[in-house]
Image (cartoon, rainbow, N blue to C red):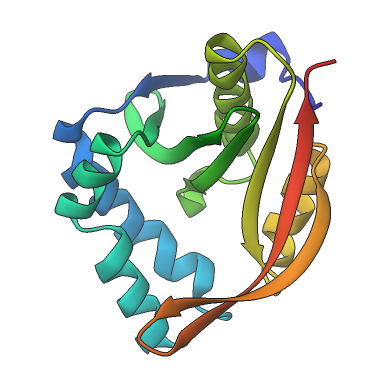
Length: 178
C-alpha cells in the first residue's frame, strides 16, 4: 500500500472530482506538465501528437462520457495536477494519467493524488482489486514514484499509439485490498 501522508502534508492539498466543464483546465495543466515530463524521452513530434490525441477538450469530455473519472489537485487554491482512472473490468482499474506541475513535485502532491485515487476506487469497489498503469521505461522518476507507492513492474511492452509512434512502457500493478 502507498505511504500515508502525515496530517500536515495532507492538509496542504485539496482534490475534487472533475466534470466535463474542467476539460479546458485539464488541457491547460497538460500543456504545462506533459512537455516537461517527456522532453528527454519523446521526440517533439511524438509529444505534439500525443497532446493532440489525448488532451483536446473534446477528447477529455468524451473520456468522461466513457467512464473515465478525473480528479483535479489544488494547493492553496492553485490547480497543480490531475489524475484519470477507469474501471476496465470487475477487479481491474487502470490509472491512465497522473501528472503534477513541476513546481509542485516533491512536496507530497503526487502521493496525495495517488492516495485519493486509491480511496475513490475502494469506495466504489470495496472488494480486492488490481490497479494497473503504463509508464515509459525511460521515465525513471515516475517508475521510482510508483514503486514507492507499492507498485511493481509486471512486464514491458511496446505499445503502438498511432501515427507510427510507439510507447516503450512498463506495465506496473498493485493489488489493493485483502
